[in-house]
Image 1 (cartoon, helix red, strand yellow):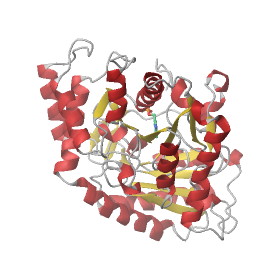
Image 2 (cartoon, protein in one colour; image 1 turned 45 degrees about the vertical axis):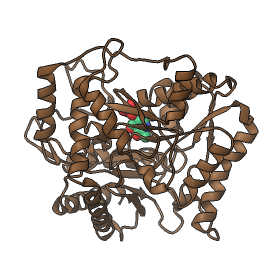
Image 3 (tube, protein in one colour; image 1 turned 30 degrees about the vertical axis):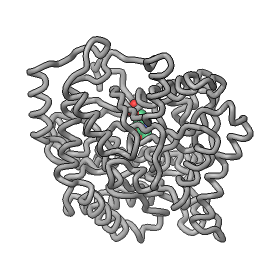
Length: 442
Ligand SMILES: Cc1ncc(COP(=O)(O)O)c(C=O)c1O
């Protein structure tokens, strides 16, 4: 935009000015309505005008805006930590509130490192993660992620990490392999890599439970994460699950890993935790990690000014209470099934749709040049970028990304609407996507 002092995310086109929120819609300054089919980036899970959350923010602002966490704790942070730990997988009882997903990842990496120092294993410092993953844009988080495009400019600033294969059935499962066999094959790459690096050197494996932006709602096959958990335990490697995008009900349960029947050592959550009403994220860890620190140096050697911000925690407390009290989890499952069907019926016959996948209200559509061979579109056609622009033109917010297959080629669209969406609005998403894809890909 001319005369703007904002350093833009993209220089190539002018953005509309968002002025109002109304349920699942954002309305710009000129009155144009956009259906938020992806909650921006899987953030606004309660839509854009929830009075309960707004009231909670105002109430807390009138009581106390800020009290530095080196001097005080505060009521909303304490209550939110209790609520999250009560509803989390066993043992994840200590919560560390930060302001973004990347900060939560940074905290998890530092906590893992400090834990091994406290228990007398200071050599353990290496991190293994997966290709086609994303864990954030700060340098530590970027270094442990496998998003080729976001890493590329900064490679020489990043700590060295190892990347194993993702669990990506549509592309990489062999024709003669069952789901279980495929899951074991790719999970066992973790064991090979730990052995290659030396178990005494490896501190953590980090993965998104359901992959988000980089590959488009990739769900793990049955048994994959159980084997990953087993390997981590066998080699005393901490398992960090990144649920910044897929947690907080997005795939159904409050914690996506519940469906994998495993419990991580550390988990990160963000996005839906504040539903966009406030910037908030969290890292949660197992009691044994906290116990080791208490027995050792006595405190986690980390910190930011806005840890446990009272207004952010009050907003998040209202969000999580609402999700639990109004049993959104069952609704998300049912709506997710409806969304999948609506996408399949409207788009399924389109020659450029390779795969429609996902869980709950977290769906990915992988686009291909040829359905039979799964050949992706050439990179220079910029299919994902063009889809984003055209959909916005047609009044739909969705989250397309290029590089789905290997970081360079492949295109997908991530769909992650607010949990309050109704069937008509889900059909509107499908129809607008159909019009967009036909316009861009033909
Ligand atoms: C899985 C995952 N981890 C971490 C992050 C980083 O979160 P933030 O952008 O809030 O720093 C993201 C952001 O999209 C994400 O999807």
